[in-house]
Amino acid sequence: MQWVAPLPTCAGADRPKQALRAEPMSRLLFDPTHRDVQIDPYPWYARLREEEPVHFIEPLNAWGLFRYEDCKNAFMHPELYSARDFIRQAFGDLDPVPETPSLIAMDPPDHTPLRKLTSHAFSPGVTRKMIPKIEAIVDGLLDEIQGRGRTFDFVNDFAAYIPVSVTAELLGVDPKQRENFKIWTADLLNAANRAALADEEVSRIRDSVSELRRYLEQVIRERREEPRDDFISMLIKAEEGGDTLTGIQVLSTAILTHFGGSETPSHLISSSLIAMFEQPEVNDAVMADRNLVPSLVDETLRYWSPVNLVFQTATCDIDLHDRCIPAGSHVLSYIGSANRDERKFKDADRFVLGRDPHGHLSFAHGPHYCPGASLGTRMASIAIAKVLERMPAIRKIDEVTDWLPSLWIRGARTLAVSA
Image (tube, rainbow, N blue to C red; front, side, top):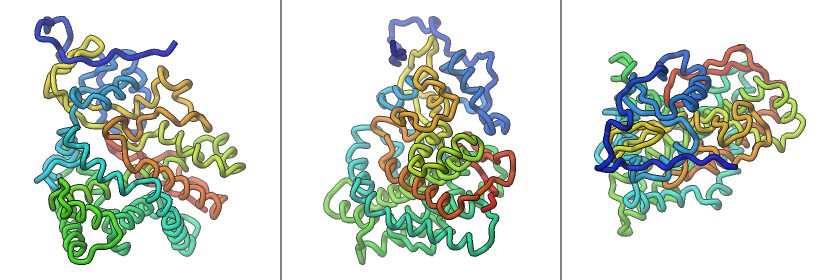
């Protein structure tokens, strides 16, 4: 018998408010800004799923959802859980394009036309055309690394450059800018931690975000004069053909495509290799049969979702699990916890190679399902397969994984390896 979560509902006007708890009182002092929690949040997630699946997170002044069906329902019901504040919560005043709502911060029906347009860049045909380019990018990076010696940082010398280079190819920007794109991506990611950063670091990020904007504005001007067969030219053509895009929306969509297409695959590649390092039986199986690499990537997506949570806003008072989430509250759907929910996945805390990959929420669900999901997983599979082919003796140097100090992203900060 399958367990089904109660559907969230807007609180009725005749429902006595005191019947449900809305006050931020809890026996669990869950603080996702604490370093120990960021290193290993999964025991906390397990307790929260059982004891307080709807939990007020005092350090963030936000409500967290921790069970699979609750997170899935939040993605499926934008009329209750709006994406409208996603960018403001993620980037604050470091938003590179504050003049217009980003696609990721729009709800249907406004979201739908722009989403359809963006999805053309990630169609199956485009993904197939990108495969030879991805292979060439990966081989080129491995050539550079092997020319320098046997030890390197797998994250910063390899994994981080692959999606940055692929996304640059997709957008149609100069591949020589890959180092800048890597820096811009890391700085946008770090904007989510702005409250804990020194003023000097916040100022540096602000300058970096401005550089990214200026560069893409220049590319957009060039594509208006000389269109090419790339994503930015497609957006401009649609705009000039009378579609809903304005010039500032072209810029916003280009930045979102760059950021969204760069961050998740980078950590997926690194985490897939870490899964092999940390579990000898997985390593032995994949080394014996490279056809298992896609299964390795799929299970890594579930087990260590690169995106740990999604920012949403309650549009009304929401009754769920004997709690009332007040209208206007920030809500965090914890993908990292949902993917470990035993109600959905058997032996959820075990890394099971060959597990049915369907159902995890690592690419969200519903209207905001990631349009680049297929491209991202193919990219990671190609990268891991080529590393194992060219570096079959690759080994982790440090015993303990250096996880990023982030409440939003799950991925290694560095990964020293020997090949």
